[in-house]
Structures are given as structure tokens and as C-alpha cells.
Length: 225
Image 1 (cartoon, rainbow, N blue to C red):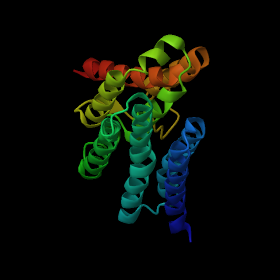
Image 2 (image 1 turned 45 degrees about the horizontal axis):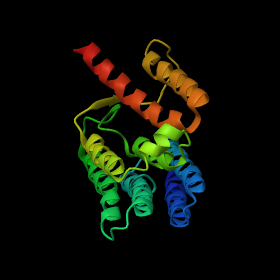
Image 3 (image 1 turned 135 degrees about the horizontal axis):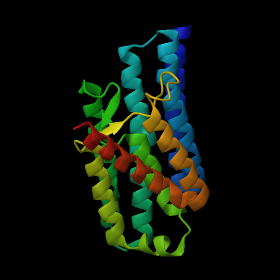
Image 4 (image 1 turned 120 degrees about the vertical axis):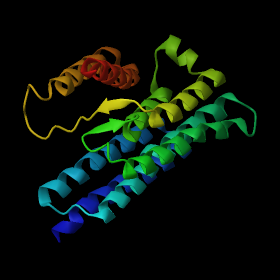
């Protein structure tokens, strides 16, 4: 029975993504955001329980990617499609937003066969990218909100999103396997700064947290050279 527990958690991730899609179709971006966050929560813990219960399997790996493809791939692409639809009368332009979904799919496929990504990442993980995109329609600050009302800005974000998902950019993992302050000082520093950004800037803090993650990873890589 225990071998099915991680796969059940993975399927809950997929279900969360499906529910998020329904809310996006209704322009309810807040509830879509909540369910994507729930899906990412399940995505984090399916692997955790697989390791704890020692029931890791090739099936679990494939299920994980398929669930992520919906929650962290299709949903953010659909969100960008909806945002572009609200700004453009062109019948075809909004479909440009699905370049995020294509980039996510390619990234997930690469991850499954890339032996370098066991304890770290190469390219932005799809859950982080999904949170970044899902936060955009929720930002209320006037200047940023006005900026995000520009079709060209959103198209640029879509291209950047697909690129950074697959860029040869080493990023540290947030999975802490033991509580060693010395070993995980980078992760702990990031988490503290992330909480401060979210408290100060609220929803705007979320894309700032993703940017901080990329910048700290780049700094960490340069320090090792």
C-alpha cells in the first residue's frame, strides 16, 4: 500500500492543476493561484515521501513530470493567453502566451534525462516559473500594473520565461535534506530574504523572490569558479 502514497500525492498535484485551469477560464486568477500553490506543495512532498518510504520508481518520475506539465506548464501558459486576450483584439496574438507551455514541456523533458540535476537545477524550475507568471495578473501596484497592461511587455515576459526555463543557468535546490546551517546557509539566507520581500511588497514580492533566486544562484556559481 505504501508504494502508492507518493503517486497519490502526485495525482493531487495534477488535480490541483486541473482545478486551476477551470478558474483561469473564469478569469478567477486568485483561486487559480491558490490551486497552483497547492499543486506545487504536493509536488514538493511526493518526492519527499517516496524517499522516506523508499518506494521511488520510474513510474513516479513519469507521473511527476506529467502532473507538473499541467500545473506548472499549461496553467501559466493559459494565464498569459488570458492576459493577452484582454489587451489585444487580434484573434491569434494571445496564443503567443503558450510559448511558456512549450518551454515548460521542453524543460521537463530535459530534466528527466539530465543526470546533472540531482542536487541542483539547470534552468529555472517549472514551479518557480509558474508562480512568477501566476502572480502577474494579481499585482496591484499602479506602475507595475500599468507596465503589465502592455502587450509587448507580456510577449517579452513570455519569451524570457521560455528561455530561462531552458538556459544553461545553474540554480541551487531548495530541498534541505538535513539541518546543517553551514551547508545550507545559501538556502536559509534566500528563505529569510524571500519572507521579507513578501511581507514588504505583498504580491509584487513574489516575482521579486524569483528574481532573487536567479541572482543568488548566479552569484553562488561565480563564487565557486
